[in-house]
Image (cartoon, rainbow, N blue to C red):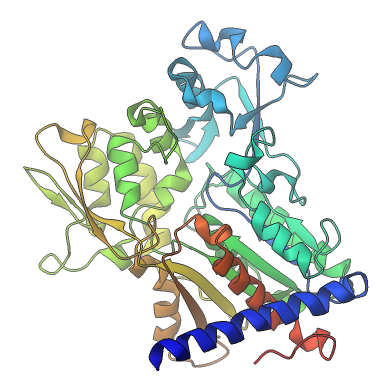
Amino acid sequence: MVKFKFKFLNLIHYCTILLLKMAVFSSSLALSHHLHPVVLIPGNGGNQLEARLTREYNPSSLWCNGWYPFPWNKDRDGWFRLWFDPGVLLRPLTKCFAERMTLYYDPQLRDYYNAPGVDTRVPGFGSIDSLLYLDPNLKHITAYMEPLVRSLEEIGYVSGENLFGAPYDFRYGLAAQGQPCRVADDFISDLERLVESAAASNGGHRVILVTHSLGGLFALHMLDRTAPSWHKKHIKHLITLSAPWGGTVEQMLTFASGNALGVPLVDPLLVRAEQRSSSSNLWLMPSPRVFGGTTTTMTPLVVTPETSYAGSDIARFLADIGFPEGVQPYEERIRPLVDRPLPVPEEVPVTCIVGSGVDTAEKLVYGEAGFDGRPEVVFGDGDGTVNMKSLLWLEAEAADRGGGGNWTAVKVVKLAGVSHTSVLKDREALDRIIEEIGAVNSEILTPNLVKWS
């Protein structure tokens, strides 16, 4: 009986999705002008990044000295795609890639900057083009938001009309109030203007923000920096996919031993220094609010033969892994940012779509080889990248507000077996995302579309 009920509910769910697609497809041209516009915000590494080398560039090897990237991969002004380039798979070129991606922290200016001689830019802000594929020459294996975009197009969304993208330089994260943060602050300002433009060009219909991973944190902090009156005028809904609200234990692995991120043939130790330099990676270290606790109750996240580290010990952890230069920016820029409650947006409905039931690093146990070796991983629940307690943290913060005032409850949709990245590709996940967007649009599409509860 239970099995039959489950199948029956699934049938209702998929029929509802089919009705939505059929209704919109039948009048897509007319309805495209009545949908709430969507702005897509990618996650860390979720859009293309371009670079150009100047005279100040000091290559570390002959491979990096004009041989790579090859001349035919550059445009007339010397710009080439830095991320993603399959050349990173070759060991000598991995070093070139890493030195060009590396950021440097100036303790006097208290801000990050590019490697000397490396100019970078984000192509196509406002467009979805750089979000579809990380390498347009390798579409099949580097597709990112392409499946989601195609699903949105099926219900009437049109690129450049009511569907927009907000790519950014994902190496630069935000910082606590009062700390210089030029690149990320500029992105937040650009995002605000994009939202205003998208709403204005769509008859004043407010924007649905759809984010993946780190993009959810940027969207949340943009809402925190704008007034409730701005929200009422420009924002309809925030839909986040796999947002790491409280950071991840996996990020400690990245800082300690490097992380190939599933890219074959790449030695994690070759990219470790570059990954440590990323201020957004530092932002994604486990939050003390989520992974901390008292000295007697805190759960260790990293264990070595000599000591252990919890979410409250990140500064000590950074020093012990051989990255003492990360302590000051963490303590001054990141700790005050993640120690405060999450800025649950006022009067903006939020839906968090998360994967669950996928083995996710919960504790790292290092042996005698130290942090240059690979740890034994103890797994827990999550989406394979983000721990479940982090995925659900915004809901917990909203519940702590007690529902008072104008605070909006956070809705969570759990998808069993869906990983951090497959949420953008899995058929069930895509259907659920479209269902949520359909529900948001129901008030302006009824009676053209099925009325959503």
